[in-house]
Image (cartoon, rainbow, N blue to C red; front, side, top):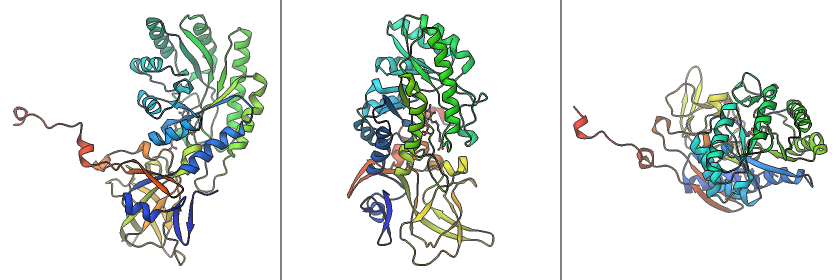
Length: 420
Ligand code: LLP
C-alpha cells in the first residue's frame, strides 16, 4: 500500500491532495500519513507473532506528540535520550514502564526524572554513568532498572556520522569491560539488572552486521549465565534502513525473523528501538518553488524549504526523492539543483534533479518523516515549518507554523543602562 500517490495526475497524502494542504496550512509543511505510521508499527509487531518482544520507538526520529500518541495507542514503548523526549512520551500518554532511557550523557536531573517517572530501563553507557545512577538510586532508596549498552565493535556499513557500534565511536561500553560492570551492578542493592543493550548504527542495509553484534551479545549472555547474573531482555537497538532511492534494505519481516531465529532459544524478551523504519516513509516535506534561477553553469530552483527544515541532504549528502505535486504532462527537459534560501552553499535539498517545473509549483520531498522536523532549526531566523497528520480524508494540524514571536519568546533586549 502506498500512502502518497498520484490520482488524476495530482499527488495525494492518503485521500487529500497536497495542493489542498498547501492552501490550508502553507509551505513548507511536514505531512504525515497516519496509516503509514500505523502499518509500519504493526508490521513490526505482527512479525513477532507469539515471541515476547517490546518495540521501543526511537523518539528522536519524529517526536511530535501526536505521532507518539498514535504509537502509544498501538502499544509501543519508547527509546528516549533526554528528559525532553521522556516528557513528550508522558504527555502523549506513553507507558513509562515501556521506556528505555538511552544516551551517553544523562544528567543528574534526567536520571532523577527517569526514576520518578518509573522508566523501564536505563541503558548505561559508561562506568561513570553507572556510578552516578547507583549513587542517585541509593540516595533516593529507589531501585534503578538498568542494562549496559555494549559496543560490540562491528562495522555497520553506513554513513560514518551514523555508525555507532565501532570501537572508535563514543557509544556503549567496550564489550570486554562489560562483564566487570555487570558484576559491580549485581552486588548493588539499588540496581536491578534487566538486560543487555546495543545499537550499532542507523540506515543499516544488511543483516550481517546485526547478526555479528547479536553473536557478541550472546557470548556476553553466556558469561552472565556462568556468573548467575540473570537478565530479562536483549535490546538490539534500532537501525533498520529504509529505501530512499535504490537501496534494498531487508524487509521488517526478514529483520524480525533474524532476531527471532538468533534469540529465541534464550527465552528472553527481544527489545528493539526502530525509529527510521517506522517514520521515514510515513512523511514528506511539502514546499513551493519560489524562483527559477538558470545560470550558464547550472539551473537553480530556489524553494521555500531549506537546510534548516531538512538537514539530511546537507549533513549526510542524503538523497531523497523530490516529486512535483502535479504530475507533468511531458518529460523533464532540464536538470535543477534544488536549493533553499539559506545563506550557505551547503543548503541544498537535491542536486541535478530532472524536473519540469515553473515558479509557484508545489514539490514534495519524500521520505522525510524521520530525522526531518526533529533536526530542524531556526537558522537564518526562519520559522520552523508546520506539521500536519492526514488520516484518510481528514487533516489535523499537529504543530502550528512558528511565528516570529515564538522565535524570540525567550530573548530580551539589554536594559537601558547597558546601552552606551
Ligand atoms: N536507538 C539508539 C540508541 C539510537 O541512537 C538510535 C538512532 C536509534 C535507536 C534509532 O535508529 P533508527 O532505527 O532510526 O536507525 N539523523 C540521522 C540518524 C541518526 C540516528 C541516531 N540514533 C539521519 O537522519 O540519518
